[in-house]
Image 1 (cartoon, rainbow, N blue to C red):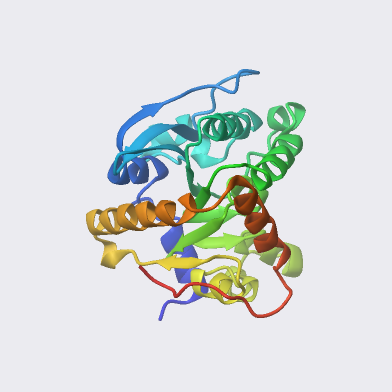
Image 2 (image 1 turned 90 degrees about the vertical axis):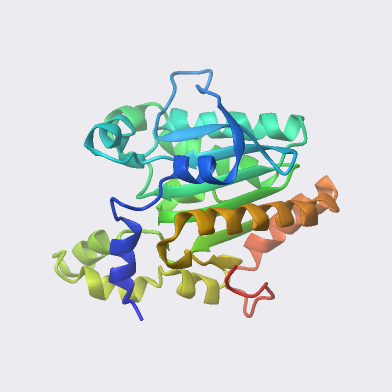
Length: 268
């Protein structure tokens, strides 16, 4: 069994599938849409329209890039406020046209530079949390790598949240936690265990609804299984009214910390 910090390392691996890979591997006919209609287009968030089993979806992903050049251009997957505003624009468009929304989340956190703060990073994240909670269309979020702090939560207020077996979900990185508690990053592995950030940990806490098998590293098998599961999830969501969707989403988050959870079995 892997330790918590070994899973952190796996979630950060340069060889891990990125958000764009998940979109291309699961959906067909992806058409990317750009810009937040306020400031700029943020390459750290990719979004647009795509097809799966004859159904049009709005798909959104944080994108880290694959090599040094693309990682720099994608800001290492740390979105600016215009990225979150772009994502929200696409989600509101999905609501207008009754399209389901699927988000693939892989970010160490929202970008914390001066420019991002000047353009309202905190407000952009808060608006996403508020608007996603009331979105009148089905929303599924899948944590595929790092799920860091509010930067990840801003795309994870969903009817269901899934998580790959080697992904992580935490309010803070183990290194930062170690530095705050012990004034050194050398105890990051100890901090990782305490943070309960692995898929098994957060499933036990009821924060996620399903752990997704990575099929031993076989990306194509994983994508095929996820395509089937996403299509099945949407068929289940189709029977619910807009009011039922929003009420269930609200109730899901209100249950956190209240005791035992009723949820589906782990694994796909």
